[in-house]
Length: 275
Image (cartoon, rainbow, N blue to C red; front, side, top):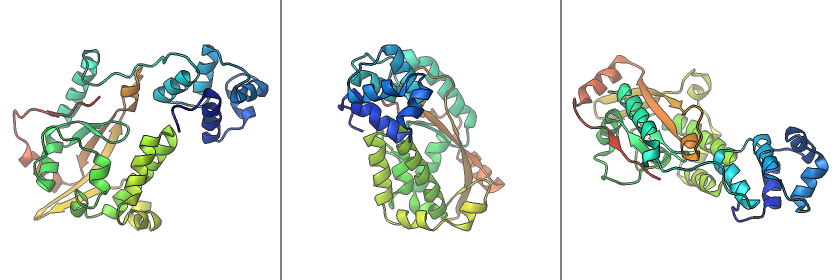
């Protein structure tokens, strides 16, 4: 959706994206259908209070709400603070604590498009074992690393099942935020060899298993893990609302023992703060 488009066209696009009629949006925003029609035609200017009701009715993220406010000529109400600023120091401390508690097993912090923001020692150990040392300061996108043919794919023995589930989640993200950036990520993932075929032919494991594992193998080492995703509660900032903490847990004793052997006491947690 073009961020430079006018408020009337943006409102109409968001309403249609949510699959709402003007009457349904009016009911959700506690106003008349006529008022919604006039807003979409540009015959009526919204008040700031109405902007808040529309954002709630359309279930907009903080970033989307800010964009709609700007289109209507209002200042944004939600902050968008880079993670490495002093303001978010308490949050970074909390993230450090969470990642440390997950040791020796992997945990990472990513943004809404799976760009790596922070990783613990267990995550670094696993990635470096599979693909070699990471370039210091290099940008890492976990979606690309998982789906592209030349990074983790060769070691992920159930890649077809995992990528089908993962790409579907990115498609859901693209539908949820309606931004060109997330749509571009989705399209890039779909363009990689074998992805379309994986989506078209789900395996029995994908359908039947209560949790889909990730199975890695390199040489004589095999890893079997499942993951959880955590979000921050009660965020008041767009950066924090979009942040996710993914934690990996072993599914068997062999995997547990491998990570315990990899653990290096006293090593520092690796950070990749991005704005």
